[in-house]
Structure formats: structure tokens, C-alpha cells
Amino acid sequence: MKSGLETYLRLAPNLCRDGHDIKEVAEKLVEKIECPNQRAHRLFEFVRDEVAYTMKFQLRSIEDLSGNTALNARKGFCIQKATLLASLGRAVGIPTQVCFQDIINHDLDPELSAYLGNVLAPHGLCSFYLDGKWVKLDPTYPKNTCLQSGWRVAEFDSEKGALLPAKKLDGSLHITITRDWGCYPDIPEIVYKAIIESFWYKDLYHFWEILDRC
View 1 (cartoon, rainbow, N blue to C red):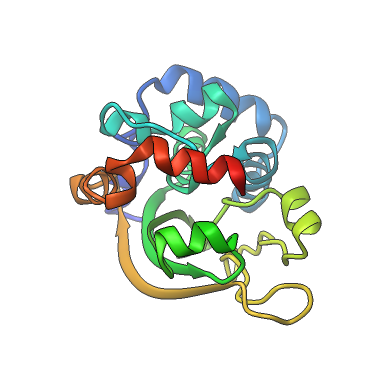
View 2 (view 1 turned 120 degrees about the horizontal axis):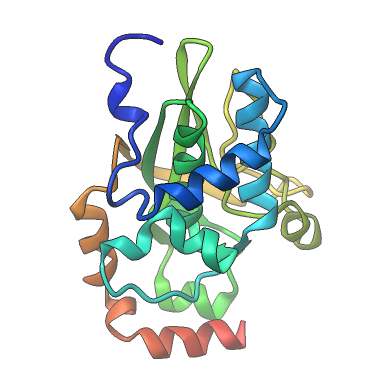
């Protein structure tokens, strides 16, 4: 293992509340898989497809952004799914980071788009250290959701990574990255503050009402 990567192997406190649960699930998922790339592929598809995506969430503290939240509920929003994937990777010996972006989802429901605006921030994903380099992996949208919605699927690639595709299946715009916040060994406090201080989070129940209508 390359020197200096130890930080990205620890189950950091905001990233993971209960290392035992994370490790147990991760080891079961990659049982009999030795290759780190194949392990990463299995973990990525588990989080992408078997942990549902939802924008309906509530945070009592920064710990609710941890991977355990999504693991226990089997659902989460982008940051919770990203922290779960990063935690699972570390639990089986793969260095990982959590990363953040501002994105535009061009296929949001019109009412939701009118309320939130064009830019969704912060959006969460993660990166894995594979074959001597960092590759970004975004497990946000399950494969079935993508196919039902006419979206391209973020497919695992150990060389190029797996970002949310820029275009839908029909060629129209889907995801545009407008800002890169960088990658971190743990969830920075600035990310948590950006969420709880946002106008839509301060009126959370109204936001949920809109989601229920979409």
C-alpha cells in the first residue's frame, strides 16, 4: 500500500458511526473476491442498486450523514449513499474519499426545479484508490430508476470512474457539474452547514410536500 494512504483507510467518525456493521456487510459482499477492482465493483453496484435514493431526509446532527444511516434504512440521499460506499470500501482495505460537487439536474420535476433552483449543492459522491490512482464513483441513482426514467446508468469503470452521465438516453441533457468542492477523508463540517443552512432545509416540511407531489 502506498505510503500516506492510511488516513483513507480509517473509518472516520462522520463517515461511519458503527464500524462493526459496515465491516460485516462489506466482507459478506466481497466474500471470495480478492481483486480490489472487482471488490470495488461489487460494493458500487450494491450501494447504487440495493440502497434506494431519496431526497426526503432529516438531519439531527452530522452523524446522520454517515454510511450507517443509509445502510440501516436501505435508502438515502446522495451524500448518505456516497459515505456508505466509502465506508464499505475502507472496511475491506480499499482507500476511499468522500467528494462533493454542485450539479444541475436538467430532468428535475418542474415544480421541484422551480423551488430549488437550477443548482443542487452539495452533491455527494466518493473516490476509490485503484491501480495507483483515484477514480470517482457516484452511486446516487439505482439502475432501475435510471432505466425507468430514460437516464443513462453510471456504470463502474476502474479506469475512468463512474460519474453521473451528462446526457439521457435520448441525448438530451441530464447532469452538469458546475463546481467541484474537492475530496476529503471525512465529511467536512462545511458540507453539513451548507445543508442545514439552506432555505429549503429550513422549511423542510414544505420541501417534503413538494417531493410528495412530484
